[in-house]
Amino acid sequence: MGALDSDLCSAKGCQDAGSWELQWNNPKIHTPDRRKIWLACETHKQSLSDFLGARGFLKDVVPH
Image 1 (cartoon, rainbow, N blue to C red):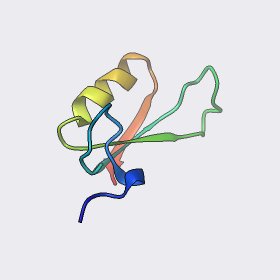
Image 2: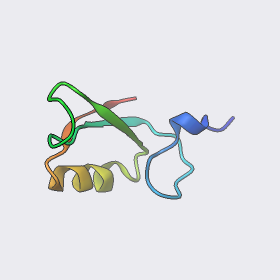
Image 3: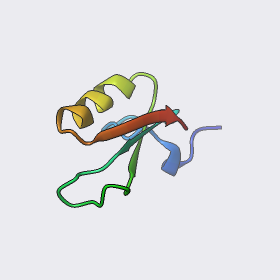
Image 4: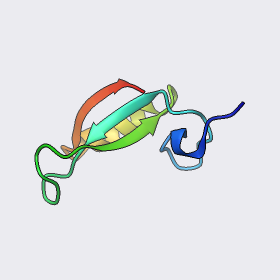
C-alpha cells in the first residue's frame, strides 16, 4: 500500500513516503515557537534541509 497523500515527501513531484520531518519556521512571519513541517523521503532529506537551512528556517529534523 502506498503512502497517504498527507504522508508524501514535500519535494516537488516526489511520490515517496516522507520518513523525516523537517521542522521549520520563518522568523519574519512566525512566532519563535511555531513549527511548520515538511516531510522528506531519504532521497530528498538533504536537499530540502539545505534549502530551509540556507534561509535560516530549519529548526530540527526528526523521524516521522
